[in-house]
Amino acid sequence: MEALPGHIRFVGVDDDNIDLFEGQYAVTNGISYNSYLIEDEKTAIVDSVDRRMCGEWLEKIGLALGDKTPDYIIVNHVEPDHSGSIGALLKAYPGIRVVATAKAVAMLGNFFEDVDFAARAVTVGDGDTLSLGHTILRFFTAPMVHWPEVMVTLDETDGVLFSADAFGSFARSSSGDAWDGEARRYYCNIVGKYGASVQSLMKKLTDCKFSIVAPLHGPVLSEHLEHYWRLYDKWSRWEPETEGTLIAYASVYGATARAARMLAAMLENKGEREVVLMDLCRHDVSLAVAEAFRLDKLVLCCVTYEGGLFPAMDKFLHHLSAKNFKGRMVGLIENGSWAPVAARQMAEVVSKMKDMKLAEPVVTLRGNLHASDTDTLLSLAEALVQH
Image 1 (cartoon, rainbow, N blue to C red):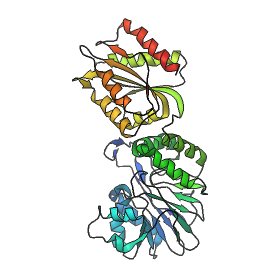
Image 2: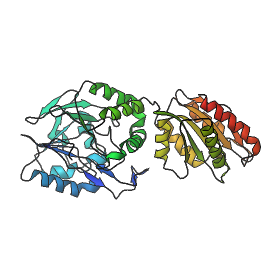
Image 3: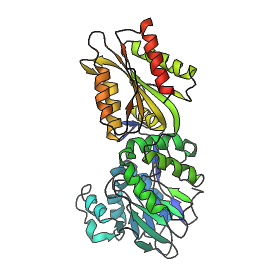
Image 4: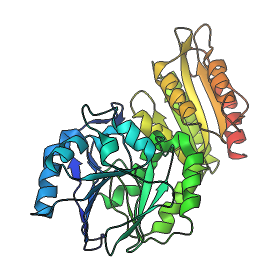
């Protein structure tokens, strides 16, 4: 990659034959598993790749190294999509040392049989350094960003931050123009619960000098770092990026969807800055979670189903709760032909989130969207735009 200094090579691989990341998040354009090779008096490989791409990764390393033997494998993160090929690397290069936190060294044993990682380990902690010759690497622990063993590695000599999953995205390594949207979706769904831990890491890095961020997924970042840093700061504080309303609906026969669309039109007529409609039954839940993070208001529209919430809404609220979502105004629209309970159940979930405010009035449909419901929808629109 051109963004990297000459002595650092990208040896990661793009995976365009995957449809779901972690078995649940759509990645229709693929994703990369990033790995880097630092060549100096001593040679270090930074992170591994998912074992499904192990063969291609080892070939790239072999071509880059030629007759050389790597001295170190730096393990910033043990999750299998980044550590899955370490066992094969150790077989190919038996003398290589494993540089990682003590927690990472212990956890690696969970994923590999008959590998004595402790015997190969160079255990590092906060602020420790490793000299490769000209290149000085400094390590910063980053527990719960988003696993407990995580660290990031700073090439102090050339200003390259190997940031583990931080600043990563649901994208391939060449997808530079996709960063904001796919990085937001990645952060909110993969890291989003651990905003306080991200804030702690950002404080550690505040006085560090780097001009390149090399994450474990997606493109290497070498321009507009202030923009990326600002967004990460907002996301990790659960602060919205912009004023606007996400209307997320789960509809069976269409009446709930029509109410959602009518509310959207009312909000737009009243000058709401941005209105986003999302059909939870058809949009990937990760997109809805990301939009909820991005905007400052949320409307939940759901039909009562078997005495509870329609499954798509239940799933969406589960994901928001799991990410410690907070600090939004929320409107409620329910639909029930004989015993509507969706609003009450949605309100119960929302009430357990921090700093949430329920908008009034709650809109209750009885089977269909009736002319008599218009005034209540209009009152809800007014309450939202006045927020």
